[in-house]
Length: 486
Ligand code: BGC
Image 1 (cartoon, rainbow, N blue to C red):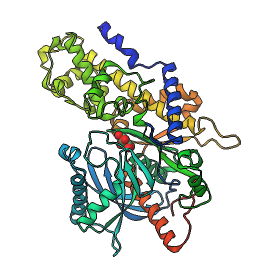
Image 2 (cartoon, helix red, strand yellow):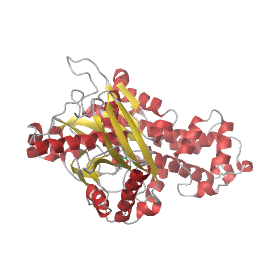
Image 3 (cartoon, rainbow, N blue to C red):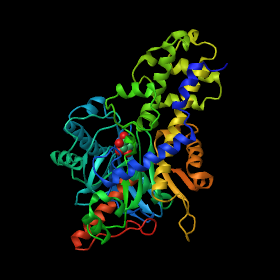
Image 4 (cartoon, rainbow, N blue to C red):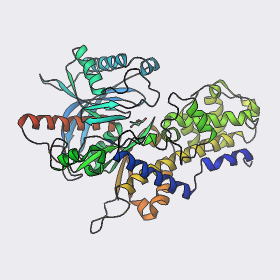
């Protein structure tokens, strides 16, 4: 059965033309440059003070904490060198009350979870000194040092009070100290930075670490000099091997906030509804079209519109479809993976709670269509973000006189891992944006556990820097792919 004409009128918002994709990449590059030049921009381009990538030889045992995905995770990470590691971990649920209550209570809960982990799971770290912990905090933070940074804004359903503008390392350390927990938070790291480091540790130097999960974001390696907002003094200091040593620095783009000004993204009425009803309207515009937290909700808005127009399910809805965030991206993945309209029909009954007698001929195809266009748009936009970084760093071409090593991108997150066809569609769009050859040079690979391994690697770098300072030596320099954290 052909799709009802109303569906095709919405398609331009989702099935983006090649021209539109190029336009989005150009805007992306401009916003990245703005974020590197000054503070306070939507695409915040946060310097991470991580000055290179590991080479896989790093060793040591560290605690890692991961806040910002679906659960709070406490881990003990053992880095064995030779690209190998082992993780012991425990997940703790963060209730909506904690997410939206007082920050002090949230951080007390985090400290209690670390305490519970150490008691229940135990740790192999034996020392009289405090245990070093890397804190993966996956929200926009204006980082001022490897172990300090102020929260700029909450995202992904968090909205705890009295946290914005505060140093999150201090909030955590104060909670440990209040409870006499012998742990030192020595590194603050975004999950994308962790993913970049983890990918490099496991499979060789990567350029980008990207998360397509509950939220979306990317980190990459740039020349420290390009981060102009650090100011000439700090840049020179960095280049001379001072406190922020390194010719290179990992930059956390915070691309989820790309085009908050709505100049180029394809904002449909369904996106407007989602944004208006969200706890952070007019923020994270890009994230709201790409990440797992929102994919189900956009499709729910489309289905509701079609139901209210008496085009779908004979005009009948269900409790699940009527509920804000009534279903999530797992349904999107299930429908994308379905082999036939009959299978989709079963999912509509079992997961959306629509009565069988209300499902008309052709309805399963309409649901499949809604899911497919939303998933296609998410993957094409994801490709725009990657292409913008590849072009910005000049990696769309092989540097003259150099061997072509390709561009490695470590990815993590539920969308990257579980949404069928996601990586194939990203690759197709990359071929459009970077040319067939350019597109082929980009290698994307899952970098699981980035937040744990990355946090441990950053804690290791911080500890080494601390030890060197105590010994009176200067901070070491890293060149991507040439020298590790040891
Ligand atoms: C946050 C980022 C994070 C991303 C993926 C976004 O909402 O702002 O800091 O990296 O989610 O977890």
